[in-house]
Image (spheres, rainbow, N blue to C red):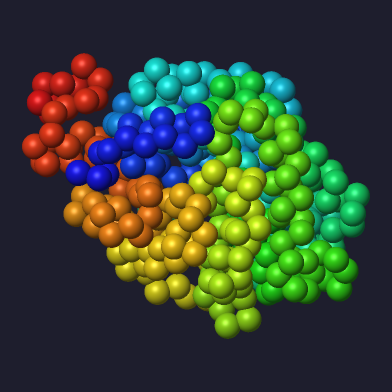
Length: 338
Ligand SMILES: Cc1cc2nc3c(=O)[nH]c(=O)nc-3n(C[C@H](O)[C@H](O)[C@H](O)COP(=O)(O)O)c2cc1C
């Protein structure tokens, strides 16, 4: 079966095509430190056999977190707890990535710290962001780079830059959030400038042999938001700087999204076809049959199972067993699956 076939991209030797996408645990404190619960959660998923685990959105600045309970990588003491998790998961055979994020106008931070491309609030119950100055942009770029270096010191195999869900980089790309009149707003080329500058800066400092993933919201599900052709164009611009693109959607507009199994697949498929960049598809992919179809039909190169891996951490072992394939997990579980 394709889903259990290995693949290699740069330093990432995938043992199968199943990825655990980033999912916040909201379990860190104001210090952004990882705790035992993070270790237990991620290590047990690693034992369950996905090839790559992308750890949750992690703030590159304290005031850049989605919530006050998100992990952080803005200072050195945060490396130790993450290194412990990375080591434990790698010993269980998982590749480890971490999603680096600045939550922009959706940050939970004191109002005077909220940054955005333009002074436009996400909603009435969200604070008004400050339109970022060039100095703000330099500071955020620097924070992404420092966090990437710390992620390297923690032993991560890869980083995922969060360019989805209406957070800072995503909001620069979206005409709904970015109404700047300078060289960072307007045409796609201008809206793409800051996200590309961040990617370029990170690529400079991140070890050459290690992969960079980019998560994007391919569409805003809004007529005035970003549309698929622009996302395809953006991925082409980012192509020299990234190894894998992870296609999600939404987050820049408060609109109902029609959700059904594989609802984001056409977006992933189009990005793969039009750009040739390896793609992770995500969004209500739950069954082996569906995951297999996606790969066999060339819609994506990897499938991410989010909530399904929360429900069933041993999805890979269970599905290998049901497909009549030999057990490949930790010896201590062999009797349950062989
Ligand atoms: C509890 C929870 C936390 C999430 N946290 C993040 C996150 O930190 N970063 C991110 O990009 N997406 C996050 N997501 C979105 C997931 O990565 C994934 O795209 C989404 O759940 C759809 O996939 P699924 O249907 O397989 O769960 C989160 C989703 C859930 C359910």
